[in-house]
Length: 110
Image (tube, rainbow, N blue to C red; front, side, top):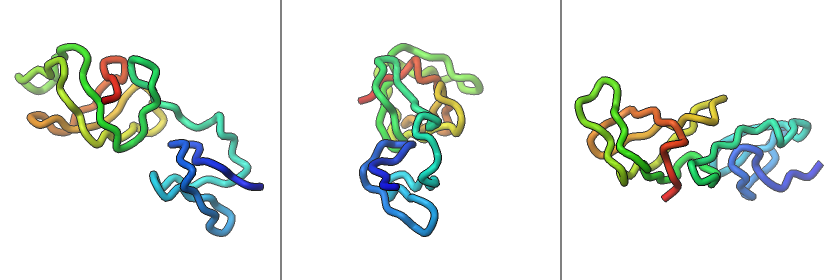
């Protein structure tokens, strides 16, 4: 059964390894029998698909729990990480605050 793209990041850079298929870009491993529609799709506030490693921008000022420094509108979050099994949150770091978990409804892809 030929596989044309990764079910997690939609990359075309995939290869077989025994009974599994592996994405060279995101490292996701799956069997050919897994349904592609079960893959988690994370979208920003404009509906753009986000993948690990993307850069996003905050669209409004946000208070940050545990910090006296707010995230201002326009703050750039580079090299995001997707939260497993949660399409509404991403992890990332700003220049001033590390270890952020942000809702995708307050972000847009840069």
